[in-house]
Length: 109
Length: 114
Image (cartoon, rainbow over all chains, first blue to last red; front, top):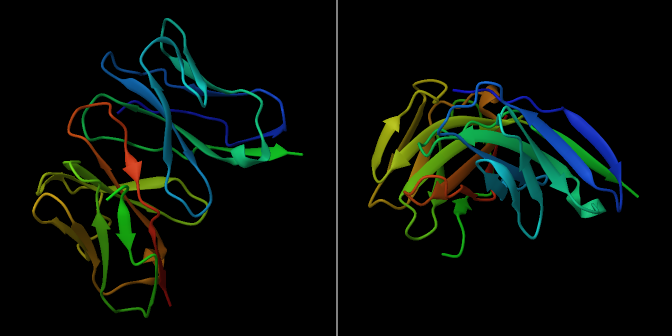
């Protein structure tokens, strides 16, 4: 299974745009890239998913370059409530959803 | 139900006792997953069900762990002869059978083994 690498932690201030990059050099042709958000004492929550180029929803944007060896989750104008752990994972439509250690985002006032 | 439901939300037990954790997936979701999350750590995949079948049990940490799913719905994760290292949050998720539809997680069952 392709492995993902993310920064362990990031700090940001309220109102800033936050970009979290995930590296996946060995991504397979069939792999989709999905991001989850986890608040303390809760299960992870689906944020966004993409295959290539750019995907945007009401919560975030996902940028995927042409070689697909990395992806960047972009959170516009973060607030204190965006403090959470963000997981990047790859899957190809099978059952294998393997979570890494994630990126711990702390938003400061 | 509206979401994935897990029970109990908290369980404190003594070392050596057996525990059962229950997961009720979203109606219509044929795939069901169990994960374990130790304090401050990422999610560890345990087992996956498609319907009542578990094609891959390789994530179960030891033979003290078992899981079953009946009627393609509710699943039970059983831990026999609990050890202190079993203390963690056990998360259940479900998804549609179609690929790339995303996982929907429950709130988890926090297990503490004294």
